[in-house]
Length: 336
Image (cartoon, rainbow, N blue to C red; front, side, top):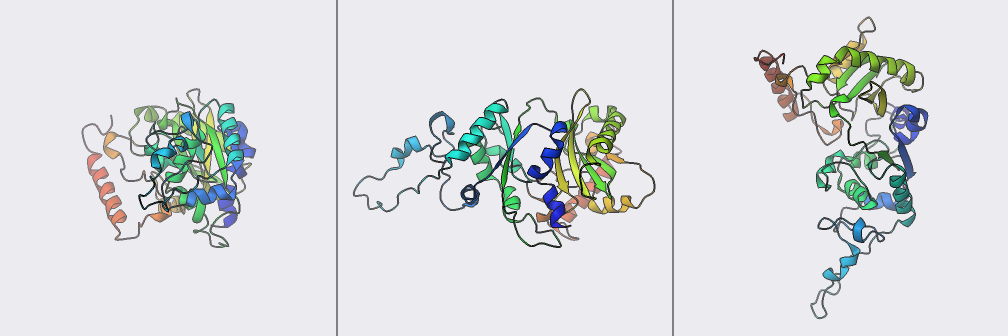
């Protein structure tokens, strides 16, 4: 993998070309002090200075209006332990507030490549839905996944010259509360040819996908040839799509081939081997029954952070999961 291939998958690079077939998104360049703020590990989580009142998250993060609650009384001997000054990003906060309003009042955030999915648990909604700058800051600061973007973006590149891009961006994507997880798919492109499609939510069996499998495959393949293949420059990559109730396909994201990209219901070895097969058939994989759900693939860390080498704990776990899946495929409701 080359740095150029990774760079093409940054949302600020691909979105302008595909905005007509993607989710409405507004993108902001992040000032370097805010990047340092995201990487700060020491001390308590402190909100930016201008965030207060209704825009703070009570009982979760510090509200500057309540700072007097933390003041140390005279003579306590701890006068030197004053709280660190709150960071201040007024221009960025104003732009984000305006963007949230433009996008309908709710967004989900991501950086150049990744979204803070692993920190959704800390939000009051349990999702990536954000309606204020403080909620976005909390998700970004609490995410371990984003450390990949911030510090290890090019670790898998053969021509690595840096550990991070020169500039980071925050993409705010319009929040759609009615999106169905079963209609999200990851597509695999090798030598500019679509060779595989996988259900993205690999921990749940959705009968509706089975009923519409051929229709979905046809729609996604047509979308690829009409919209993606002519305009995306890389030869090998993956892209994620969402299929609406009306059958329209929306582009969600691009990811590099291999490295930190999860192969979902495939393995990278299978995808490499299928590339050499003759014909233009696409391998479309879904969970066929409740008995063949593959646990363990829905992780909150980049794929290359997992030790899946022969003999590792993950290797043994996945082997056992595959074996159990084959056994359970014969269970009574296997075709339900």
